[in-house]
Amino acid sequence: MEETILILDFGSQYTQLIARRVRELNVYCEIHPFNHIPEINAHVKGVILSGSPFSVRGDDVPNPELNGIRKELPILGVCYGAQLLAQQEGGLVAPSEIREYGRANLAFIHRDSKLMNGVNDGSQVWMSHGDTILELPEHFEVISSTHDVEVAGYKIKGEETYGIQFHPEVYHTTEGAVLLRNYVVDICACTQSWTPDSFIETSIASLQEKLGNEKVVLGLSGGVDSSVAAELLHRAIGDNLYCIFVDNGLLRKNEFGKVLDSYKGLGLNVKGVDVKERFYEALAGISEPEDKRKAIGRTFIEVFDEEAHKIKDVKWLAQGTIYPDVIESISVKGPSATIKSHHNVGGLPDVMKLKIIEPLNSLFKDEVRKIGRALAMPADILNRHPFPGPGLGIRIIGDITPEKIRILQDVDDLFIEGLKNYGLYDEVWQALAVLLPVQTVGVMGDERTYENVVVLRAVGSTDGMTADWSHLPYEFLSKVSNDIINRVKGVNRVVYDISSKPPSTIEWE
Image (tube, rainbow, N blue to C red; front, side, top):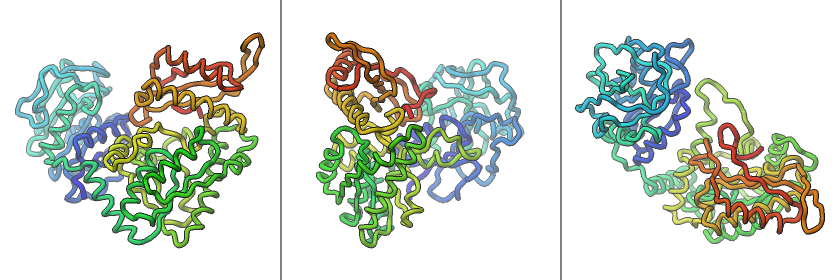
């Protein structure tokens, strides 16, 4: 097993960012809810306590028993985590007289502190707290301060336990990476051995041990996650992996053939199934987004189940689940609110009675791409923009017809190819087109038209949790808009979406 940093999640919006920063140091880490602390074994080298939207002064707030970890392992409390440790030991946490949200600068740094080693005087940090530590217990010592907050950081004497009231994981803390490296490498003594090559080596060995000579079925989507999962499994078990690629009629233009060809070029054992008419029939007359998702998911399950049963003695179902899917399925304070059903298809395990294997469920999206590059997979697969499981079905607002799909496929094709031709595709995290249930007046030649409106959307992001709209060049938008209106029959107006996430989502449905 890998050396591991354990992150206890108290509900902070930044918890996943802490994990990403630790992994950038080539050290494996896991996030667990504060109320489900896993068994601490020899592979755990340190524990980070995250921030939280709660106040340590409130009732029924996260307050785990940490005595079994304290003094046994180095601990780093961040914001809420720092305040919790101080309060548990008898310190005073109170509402801040000056609420610190945003940038601040360190005015004092304890030069003998291992945590603060290499952090410069005046270094910018990012604060986000309404409470502050006013009094520390006697066995605590201050290791950093800002002009307004005396206890910006502390150490508990006689143990490797630290607390900081700022967020080292965010970009605005300019030397946060230095501090985290001090903690992970120097204090926790991690060897930084978790690399793409080491992940591939250990994963293949683990898959071979777990699967033996048994058969595995995997549903390919053409996306990064399922493709990398397939390649990893193929390296481990060869032709015992059976891949199924379903054409639901909601893919991008000509995508079914292109993706099948790319998979066969990788040597994968893959079967393409063209069942678009079956999906169109299941979607007939349905307009509500969740109903469309359910109809698409239900039909996929039926088709995939039928195809999987044609494979004799299959025992395992492989899925391209990645770490954010796992994290989002666990809530710190109970079930999270449902914004929309997950893109990944649900229900397959219960229907098919197969054992589940998820080779990527410890990785973030950018890490999956790194693994794919280490496996020497084609760039056009690894750099492909995210594409939702329901496909164009959730990019057509209202009911779905073959004609609407034809229009949107043509629009999407011109937009995506235009981005590639202008060298913009790799600068954008995700690009898409949406067909609105709106028609507007236009003029083409001397004739009045009354045709459809399409929306173009492009966003920049790291993992899709937050996103900002991409500031594409005006000349590009002008060119692609003209191309769409002139070449796609049924469209006479193009608009560009300049909404960010939050408050908007990336997809429209």
